[in-house]
Image 1 (cartoon, rainbow, N blue to C red):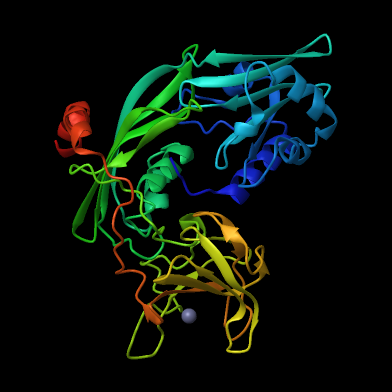
Image 2: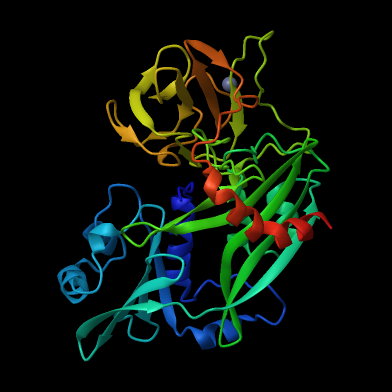
Length: 403
Ligand SMILES: [Zn+2]
């Protein structure tokens, strides 16, 4: 599955967790107190999010344990090929709270298995283990009054589950600009417990999002595993069409977008042919990560004389390209291949701009089009022969979502 990444946010979490000396467990219920969290995990956890192109040694370096790289590789070689680690996933490093000794590493190879490296008597030992979570199913629903993020947080939904839901609809709902007051959502997801303690959300199983009068549904389905043991899975609508599309709906992490629709202070402009503003402006704080909406090649990355400030252009195919303007930082170069969701720069206010925002354009055959109304076809639909199994597997969820 291809998921958009929230690399910077995860890194910040990891750093906060590290320095605060606490494992960040987002309490989902009142019983889940900090003391209990500390009891089940006596270590400091550092989570490194794998970016595309990162090698294992880049990851150990990011975690500050590059001196252990070779030992870890040696210990793992008969168990799992670390060259197979995938962008978008995380590697967890555990440090003893007292001594700060790095003594454990966990990498989840797929939804059921994790690679665990433990240091005992200064020797690293690796094993592949089936994850033995106790799974409970949870259903939550809500009506949006300010933003989806706020609405879900107000209900004490684990932030990671909120992000999971946003990932399901990342290609079909613009959580930054496309949300309307009164939009509703309902989703069914797994909660994972170990020894009776809530650990984390598992998969989002099914979800419905009523966005601006349009109902969008997504159901999880796993067809099997590929040759590398990776899940062949995804989210599909009732017709078996994948929710995954060529473009993400939104180039900015929606949690950072400051112009909520009820604030009335949105100075930014939407797409408007009559005013000549053929773009969407996302007001977000300075430094907010900007992600590529789709795979492509960077065709421009530099200062624009036309008022765009720091501008990046990505060519997606012979029809489409996208432009990202006023950036404070640019992380990609001309000629570079970028992946969907890859962070390519940071929100700024360079060029003709009155405050930090991303001026975002989609160009179709040389003409700037309205990104909010662009509807791309689905990428990987289920084949006809998979449909009976798919429809059967979602029957109960379908009922629950609509009752
Ligand atoms: Zn603009």
